[in-house]
Image (tube, rainbow, N blue to C red; front, side, top):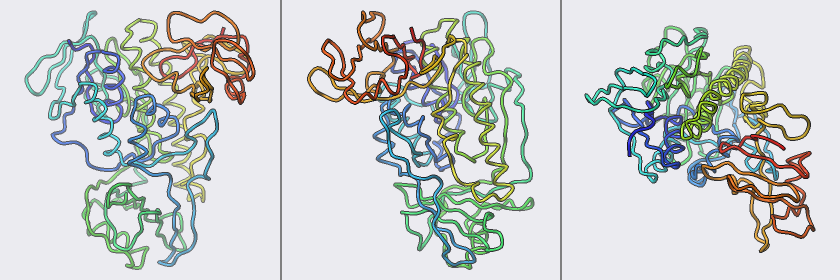
Length: 468
């Protein structure tokens, strides 16, 4: 199989894109310039919409088995227990939203699960392989690799991070700022005496919002450590982490083993373009976020989920839609992250809490190039909700199960001819007779408001394409 798409970068974005292409039988290579796989936690919060994407990709069970729901946060002030807080109130699943809360899993663990899925599809990440040059013409892209190989591909996707070689080679501006007023010491560390069934916050009583945080990394002996540091602080050793903790904990917790650490400053940047000819940008190469709200990794995964089926199809209309759809979403998400960062800087009590605006369930492509105008109820460009149904044998089936896979899906609500161009299902109301799936609880009709007697075409990435 020839290389149709070359992906630079094997983080969550590049891996998701590789899976999307490989499961469609598209020739893809995924390159990673690092000699070893990333071993830190970094982006550890998976939002509800990303969980829905992972269900479609076939990795959700593994993600649930390896991770954990949001932990209660035990707050200690001046070394004494004060209270228990939560990032967000627990929310029960609904027929339309099966995964209403975030899920915590270290980024390196998420990447390992995605790599395993990609390998099942016959594609392995090429470690120690860096993109060193690129040129494109009307027919394709020529890429030079650090191994000395020259690769010819139809398309190239830069998923190679905030310092993206691809973006720089294209000369695309990376507009935004680096906030020099905030510096955080981050690390994955084990801690003596802290339980793994809770997160922890240690702070001085007179500065309760400026403290040291510990979040358990499920399935490992480590916690993700986070502490604000001064401009002159650059040390990332175990002793440095211990010193920052001792200042607010009274020396009551001993750190034992440091697996990874870094000094971080918030970058808020958005690429001026997500595409140039046959070359596309996705993930951190196109937008970088502060960690507030847990949006960066999730937005990159959904860039790839949006782009994969379009690259596989290759039609100009679909490829042209990637930038306007995803750049608008990235700009909005950056606004959410930035607003939460300002709360953090101001010391607001709710700076660490996450509300519905961070779940990415309400992001739409309404008014985009693939979404004709619509009125009322479910509209083109909206996320297609889930809902339970019953087949002719009385077996429960969900809409998300019908959507799963690399295809578009047509739902016919009520009587009418089924389509022939993609999987097509008739949805009947409770008590109706006929050849179709029975909506016994009225859930599908409720979630897809105003669609009785209509056809809803759902895109391969789970957004409504049309209502007719």
